[in-house]
Image 1 (cartoon, rainbow, N blue to C red):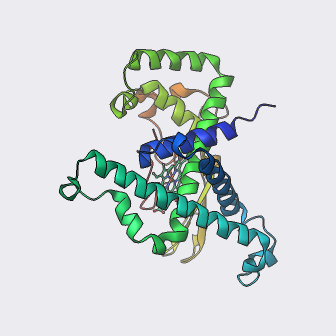
Image 2: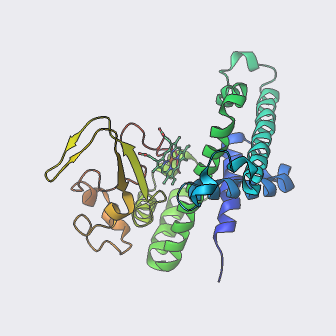
Length: 273
Ligand code: HEM
């Protein structure tokens, strides 16, 4: 069996380095491979820690004694050091290109992150790993869908050649790719990368059959909503056309929520491509 994911992990990491940090992968090859390994470790732990681990491994005083926790600490330190180093490098690259005009420029966003790095230590490393993991999963599912639906692949290939026609890839052209957006949304409908989100109530909610009390947790089953036949025609089939503008206008609100919804929805939802 051919494993696609390891290739996608590397690809997304490369893209992350170039687009967020302005660093080419070749500059860091060996170090990069190690970081990808540590990132995977952190993501797996974040996903499985609260749900699958036996209760005694969830006790705060036992955790630091376990081998896994030691490994996670090393993972966090390594990822943070790596980010810190390439951030410094990215900033000095820009400064050099700017011929000492650095004081006239607005501060790079990463300067802020860099200054309060201690405070953000745990959050930043695990968040950045989760984000890269989400993009890797989404990209992997898109490639899988394209491999299984060659007619869709052909249409997308056509759109790519018409859009770019050997021109430079930029945000403006990417945003104009309507069919790609349909493929992308249909993939996230069938395979929402975050299949369940939750909210804690800050007041009672009266439903027809019962009242949900203040303080309780409500699970929102994104995967089940996305595949519910009450809202979706042939829900298990891959049909990108259901996301065309004309077919989207009649869609019921909140039946497609791959990025969550409300005040705490995904911050990156507009930045994915
Ligand atoms: C296909 C890729 C992605 C998917 C499917 C995804 C999905 C999600 C979901 C479902 C949530 C929870 C929302 C909720 O509870 O309502 C979330 C939160 C978040 N996402 Fe994403 N995400 C993706 C990529 C990204 C990217 C690229 C970024 C940053 C550039 C990002 C940053 C965040 C942040 C910061 C939060 C937490 C927001 C908060 O708690 O207020 N995500 N994401």
